[in-house]
View 1 (tube, rainbow, N blue to C red):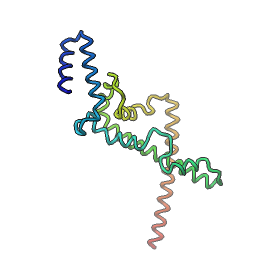
View 2 (tube, rainbow, N blue to C red; view 1 turned 135 degrees about the vertical axis):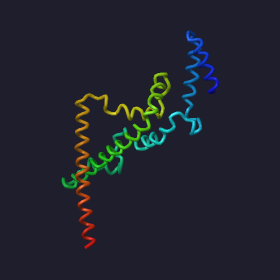
View 3 (cartoon, helix red, strand yellow; view 1 turned 120 degrees about the horizontal axis):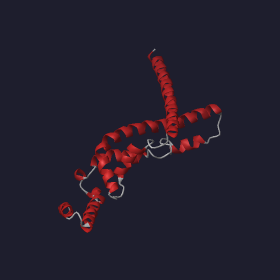
View 4 (cartoon, rainbow, N blue to C red; view 1 turned 60 degrees about the vertical axis):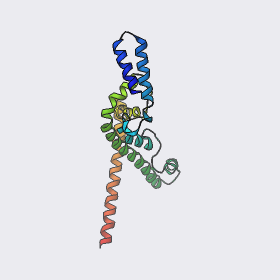
Length: 188
């Protein structure tokens, strides 16, 4: 197949005016691109993106569903309980949100490192009319998140994230103090 594509490319370069030759070349290239996942692992284009893509899909970072203890947190969100119990349930929901933010941050950094080489190839494939694959999911995750939103919407979202993460840090600090006190009591 590769030899045939090389021949078609040479022919298309020689006959730049012939749209049928160019069309045949494009079709062959896109056909090969669509079957890239069938290639042996070490020959797959953009194969180094696979671990990050698999993690993105497994963690469903785009979803709004709770990540940890899904049924329990859904129930906690609507529970009719005393206010001090409700505060702790709300805190658990907030911790789930904070964990998602931290996981998303780690994945975004991993994705940015892996996508730098792949982005031009994925962009060219999209411009050529290739169907979107898993690589495009990764490129969108890195490039599109909130950067294209209006600044007021983006600002509000950032403020919400900072607030939730601040609560996470405060609770983590409180828990550290509690664990240190418990450890000291056991040492005595």
